Image (cartoon, rainbow, N blue to C red; front, top):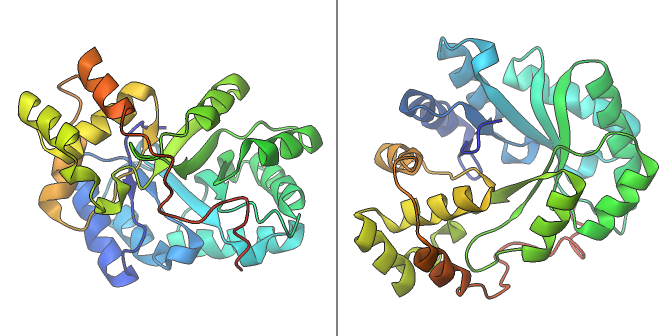
Length: 263
């Protein structure tokens, strides 16, 4: 799985084809979508039209909350695959744990079947807390490959990252740039960007990479899509990393996985 990918959250289906095409032309090979995003068809069209060998692409989608349960998961997977136009998926994630419903273990057992049947190369989770993962791994046999969680300099998720590392689970960051809600104007990040002759977004993405996070920035602006992948030719120093580490506020932009139970 490439450490840097392209996310298509909040991109309408009729714009997704263009955005994903731009990303693939810029060099991205990992594309992250989800059933609830409503853009699997547009994403699939871009993948098909790219001319790139299937084995060069890494495609992730996610099961939405309303489809939790064994049989419903298998049906939902078929729908997603038809929309994407793919024969197999590289990574399938449970989008949210929905702890009040208590069905994620049955759901994950369906994931294990899809994995065993070769229809999915890797299976994982999104927005799961360590307590949810504990319950899941005790009842199932395949360790999740990935847990995709909200993670940015204002919410650095030290405990979750440490737990994932202990369990052999990769940490993937959603909203890695803080959804543009003030993070890129923070003086410390602006100063680091000026020091390296980079943009604030590039500095934050480089920070993620140096922490070992998998990261999936999203944009529909061609120049930003290209800018976001140009982060492999510079490094942050100890002083930079310390300055960004000091920005942690434990502040979520999205829902709390412990209480989010929306269908």
